[in-house]
Amino acid sequence: MSSCLKALSPMHAVMHDRSDEGAAQRNIDSFLVDIERRAFIMAELATRNRDDALDLVQDAMLAFVRHYAERPQTERAPLFYRVLQNRIRDWARRRSVRNRWISWLQREDDTGPDPIQEAADPDAVPVEQRLDGENATQRMVEAVSHLPLRQQQAFLLRIWEGLDVKSTARAMGCSNGSVKTHLSRALGALRKQLETFRP
Image 1 (tube, rainbow, N blue to C red):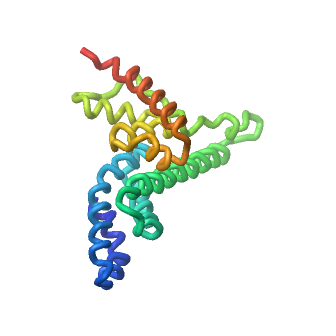
Image 2 (cartoon, helix red, strand yellow):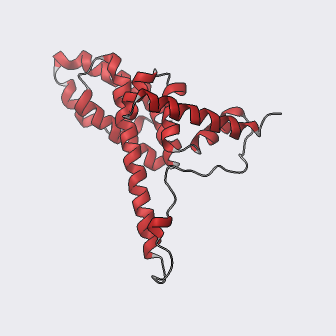
Image 3 (cartoon, one colour):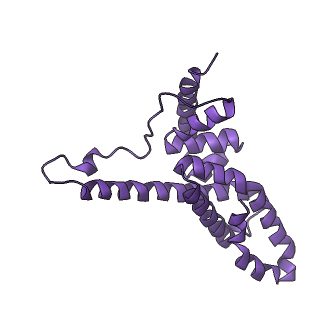
């Protein structure tokens, strides 16, 4: 995961040259190092692709440093996760559009139903019949990866990352009530999925 921070090195070099900003830069570096792995796992769960996840985290880190580096430490986590979640939502929208166009272009004739109208909702990820689980952590990761995107975000930010409702709402760009609704649905779905694996 150090590759994320390596991508920021030119910006770091410029900022390190300024002695008065040295302490602030070390503080930002420390924050990014601390958050990097968890952010990558969030992105990988959403995209199911390591390369896409790495790109999203790098992009989020660059945007965060560019726009929010001067913000107080207490505001950093919600702001960073909001940037990351926006990048993930943008990625999901682009993928949905791309898949619809591919579906349209692969049609042999125009007499069938409109693939755009029939395209699956990108947030409605189907649940696997069986999860390949030898341990509870792997089962949980699989179950979380099958949640719709907004439920996944609410679960990871509230339960895994430990943000409060207000900070989670800020990161997700929604209301406190929406966070509670998404989290409640996520927990219900996870309980149902993981019930299969109880001894």
